[in-house]
Image 1 (spheres, helix red, strand yellow):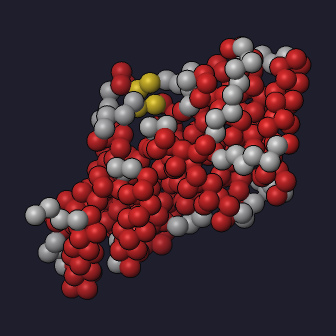
Image 2 (image 1 turned 90 degrees about the horizontal axis):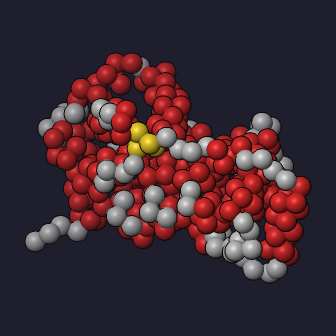
Length: 297
């Protein structure tokens, strides 16, 4: 009879705990096998992820299994590095530098004002604002306006609550514009700036809430690897190492297992973001533990 997902996590936990208590590697192979099996379960859909992620994370935290997760990370990361340069897709960034006219700026401002004067509640995961009255050129200009605004304000390490709220509303508009242009991946790379500023401004719970909303949206957009990548950024900035590594492992697993398009920006984000927590782990636990984590599995 097929084991339930909860039972797989329970067995993983028992083996991990046994090796921790006995300071042994008796279940080394089974732990690695079941870790990958659990990753497959977690990335299936949002309800499954939402239900089982806390249970798996709790097991990793209780058994202080950072080394185990780092070992899995290295395996997945190595697979990424073996990709040929021909497999890497370069994202078109020209939309960010679109020349902006005063007419489009005023038109976008008016549309945003009309949207948010209403009593309707907007969410990133349900962003479906209609820009049918915008030309293709005006949509590109609108995207450039909003991303430039976010980039400009991101130069300030601390934001006020009003700044955070304003950019949250702009992100909802941005997602609708990018979706209509068929360039939704730009949204997931832009929103990481927003999460960084929420964290640097010490709006930690708000950052986690937004990160979760982004995951919901990414499942709907069929790019959950980018949603999990943003949670990786968010939790690594907050020093939640267990959660950060688990999120990045989920992201890498999706790219590897389902042969997702390998975007150049994804690789850049991965390289820029993975070293902080690896460095932190080395400082706290020593280089020998990182080497052990890589070799153990």
